[in-house]
Length: 212
Ligand SMILES: [Zn+2]
Image (cartoon, rainbow, N blue to C red; front, top):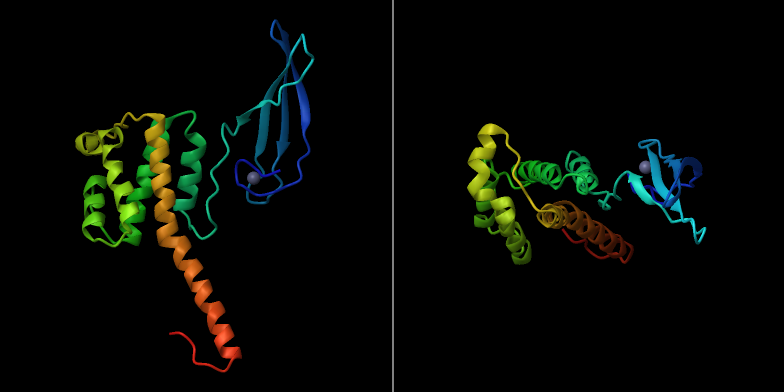
């Protein structure tokens, strides 16, 4: 199976622990452990076997609460780690997920686009003004400012550490925008560079001048 924590494939060995029974059926937890060296995390499902049909349910994931969205290997830390955590925490706390996503966005814009501002909404304006993003990505980034009414709340947020209220869909939107920016800053440059290298190898074998 693919580990829902770290997205690595591993051979699972489930063990089942009975929890007891009630009017809804027999309850159980099944658990396995990811064997990737960097992970080793427990994965657990809560399941129920129906009284009437004796059919066991598939079980719902209780640890982690949701499957991490895959992050391309080209994306470095801390963005990679922040993004994974923001996806895992989303079902439990959209607010916490959005706060992590915003932190990730701030460092991404500061480090990759060299736009320093204390406030995320000002950084976003700077990024849009730089006109370096493709238009679809600019529009998505621009829309972030409406998440939890960011522009209006940010001064308060900045000084009190208060976490802005967001809807789950808004927290999810932040993740989608981050995925678009990851693709632009890390994935596409790596893909294009691999393509150029492959072409240069062919040109070299053919005895032709290489691309610069
Ligand atoms: Zn894992």
